[in-house]
Image (tube, rainbow, N blue to C red; front, side):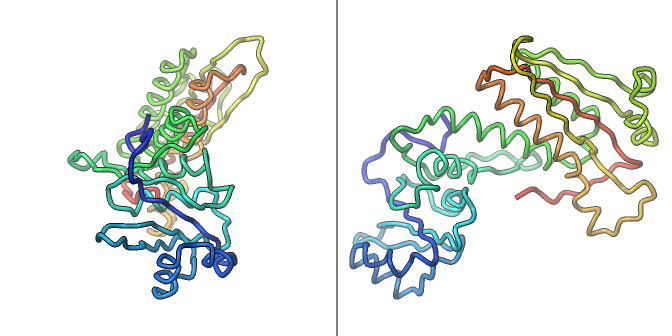
Length: 292
C-alpha cells in the first residue's frame, strides 16, 4: 500500500470539502467554532482554496477544501499536495469525492518528479483508508499514473525512441506479455513507411513497438499511442514557447503504457495489444518543464 495511506490512526484530522454554491447551507451544519473561523477568514469555497481550522491546543482541528463549481473529480489531491505531515481522515465531502475516488485523488497528489534531484525522503501526510476502499488497488492505479507521468516529464535527451521502447519492453515483461520491436530501415521492409518517414531524419532511429498480453480467446483490446519524443515541426519553425512542451508529444504513448500496466496488474479478461510508433522529428530537445 502507498506510503501516504494508513489503515487506522487515532486522532486523525478530519478533511471536509464543499462546493461554493453549497457553502451557505453547509456552514450551519458545522460546529460553531469551525463555522465562525471560516466566516472570520472569509472562506468562500473557491476552487482549491484550503482553510486550516486551528484547534484549542495549537494544532489543526480540521481542514476545509473549496471545490468551486465542483467540476474536478480529483480535487482532493490538493489536500495531500498542501497539508503538513500528520494523519488525516475524510470527513464531510460530496459523494463524488468520497471513498475510492477521494483516496485515489489523495495518493495522486503526492506525486513528484525527482529524477534529477538528490533523493530525499519525504515525510508525507497520511490518509486513513476509508471503510470499503481497497488501498492496494488505489496504489496500483496511482503508481501506473506515476509511471506515465515520469515518462512524460523526462526530457527528450533522456527519453528518445530507444528509451521509450525500453519502457514498453519493461512494461510487457512486468506483466508477462510478448514484446517485439521493428527498428530503422526494417520499418520499410515490414510496410510501415510513414513511421520511417517521420523519424528517419533523426540520428536516433525510429521504431514500432508491439506487445501482446492475455488469453488469445478473450475479447481483443488494442491501444495505440503517439510516441513522438520531440517534434520541431520538421523545419524548426516553432517559437520557444511551443518548444518547451514538445517533449510531451509522446504523452499518448506514455498514457497507454500506464493504462496497459493497470490492465495487466488488474488481470482483466482481455487480449491486450499495444502498439506505439516511437520517433524523433528532426532534432533532440532538452525542455525541462515538468508535468503538473
